Length: 293
Image 1 (cartoon, one colour):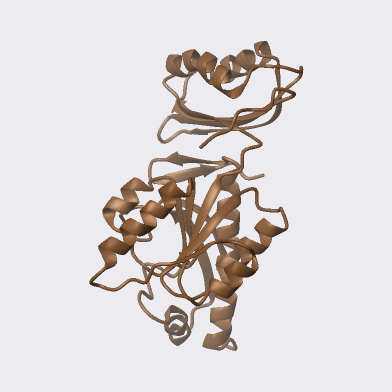
Image 2 (image 1 turned 60 degrees about the vertical axis):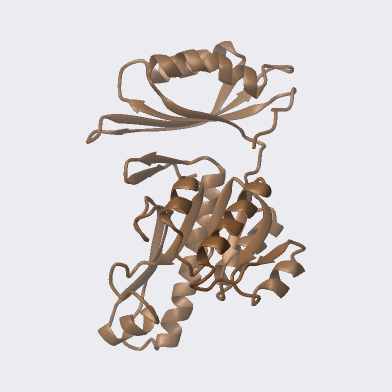
């Protein structure tokens, strides 16, 4: 879902990737200059291994009544075709619509809701979905719809179809798995490709299963952390967006490791959602290019 740019002083975000070749930056800058736009922010990266070029640029109109988003897209398509770009042109004022999925742990959910309520997270949260009732009081305190979709081995497929229908019917642009402790099917992962972000502790592929922090404590781990990534059918192995770690030592109890881990998970997931909302992330095969602010 996109909305039209305001007719007065619109702003647009262009992001693209293509094979690296001479003249790309000049062509982009010249086009927007001729359309009456000025560059406010620009980042670029050349991956020498893949010979791919990545760019994100924010443009602002320097005159009233400039071209709208649809007109800019139509006009820019000639340059995009010339350089065989994989590209998107976004309205900077549009806030992506986000559906959050959660199970029983609310640390990531609460951080996202609080940041959204304060206006620090540039998204529109449309609802929260869960397979438990635990988080309903928190979500409804924030004035958001709460959808409880219990799941069991017998109804897992039907429950996932309900979740996907909720995503579609709410007009959501992004699904955030804020410690949603259910594995999505290959079909769901394909349907939500590039539109779903997950968070997990960074011990993986070690310490799988229940009580990972207790497993880490038993092994005397000295670093714990979290990883946010796009969801793919390769469980917990999608393109990484953000990671962080915290040093711990022998004096930390398993309970303290859990609390430290939860804090890191909340921060890392919030950064990933924020950067996605600002169109700062470009896929580069199994990796990402992230133009951090």
